[in-house]
Length: 533
Image: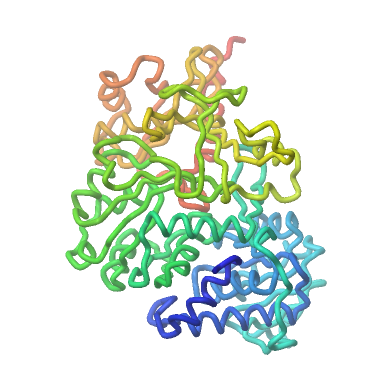
């Protein structure tokens, strides 16, 4: 039985040693080789003096060494911290300082960009460089107080066993953007991640002949899940650092991909592409999370991929994954994000914790084995989000903690959930609470735009005004034309007060989602001139 995160790979190596596990470009590692590389990575980190539960940051693009380092840190009894490769030096430095990283695994070019930031990371003592030997002559062997060495160097204590940990110990810290302030670190245990892999691989029916394409960054729980679910099932993961949507489809065709996970902005682009027959034939399922998939996008994907099952999912980093909609329910439950995943309970509650009636909007609360350990070194925010689960028997001496998501949903009589909006994204205008998702769905339904984001911007008379930022499907669209197309479908208080049309795709954050925070900052002063003198 697998109790710890890395056990899945080690067990697969014992039972299916020659089965392909990891593909990167033209190189393939079978499970025996992957397990050996994870053991070697563990020994390398132990040889650098890694102590039990110390943090190891991995700041690389998707490549085999990234996987070795992440799982090797877990094997050593440490805690891995995947850092999004799109982040810049200041953001990386914040993460290294915030969770007291001791060892950093990165590349030579990334290290060069990080030099100034590392001076402010007093807990960091070693940087291991992948792909290039540090040069003694150029001074690359030291960065201030930090020792720099080659990742491929010989372990100082080869064969040394990792520290003993159990399933309730920390395994990873994933940094997620908050509604305000710097990213916060979500602490996940081995139990969280093993339970999540087991649950997701069960309802996706993952099997050894699956080939799962890893597109999303491993710093994103949804991206990391592609590794954990595949290894749980003994399947193969194909690593891809893509530039264009066409690169994704080429990989599906070339590598015989059977499982593909993406976020809505990428699905919108992929839905507009032509899919060759080989890609259409191999793709067994697709999954969506990280936001609601527009109905028009889903319809286009189903038309292009008629033999592919579509799983719509909802999750949050604090609980890894919460709900999924079985493909058989897509037509029966339009707009639903599904029911609770296996081994989790999803409740919809009022502010006082009492259960909502069917159809009544309330806060989504997740309880079960996937609930994270809290936010790293932040007891105040942990206490806000991680609170006792509603409805516990009064005789239980230790309260079970649940994640209070801050998301507003409603549940029907059959237990299917429907997303209403995030508490920190809900727009309060003219006394009404408006869901950005509902406005965006209406915008996409017009067929006039390729991308859209609805925002709440401070307004002196309305409280907040609705601002819509959109990328037209075709040149020549006017803001008034879009508003006219929305009038029959939205009440007056939900119509945008301002429409900003773009000629380029909307900005993305590090996880590939539309960057609402950046857009909100751009339009924050839009109505200031209307304030009375």
